[in-house]
Amino acid sequence: MKMAKILVVDDETAIRNLIVAVLEEEGYDAIGVASGAAALRVAPTERPDLVLLDMMMPGMDGRETLCRLREYPETRSTPVIVMSAAVTAEQCGPEAAAFLPKPFDLVVLLDTIEQALA
Image 1 (cartoon, rainbow, N blue to C red):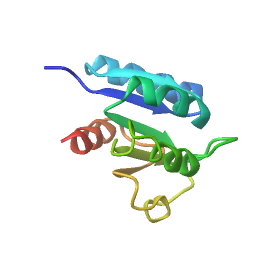
Image 2: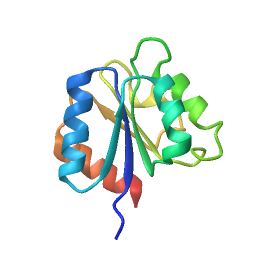
Image 3: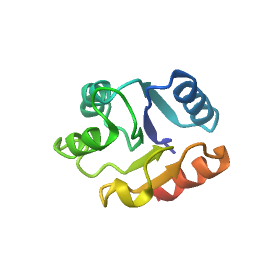
Image 4: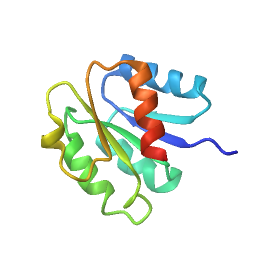
């Protein structure tokens, strides 16, 4: 069985690298990028099965990144899990498949990913 490809978008290097390492340890194909602009360059060609998206990033924030991902046919229906320490679930809007408040427990992260992929 092919494991899901997950795009991790977070400007905080330590958090992004930790999430990518945990996902790879769990057997996922994980790709980490540091910005919304990088996500928009990578997503159409990599075609992730799921996107983990930080909301608070410099430049293009998570909200704009999510809206732009929805414009591409390749990522229009890709589930996006929003992560944030400063934004609430209600502020994410209906485009998000799920919301994870930061800091989050890694077990909760993995459970949320499994639910979004199901």
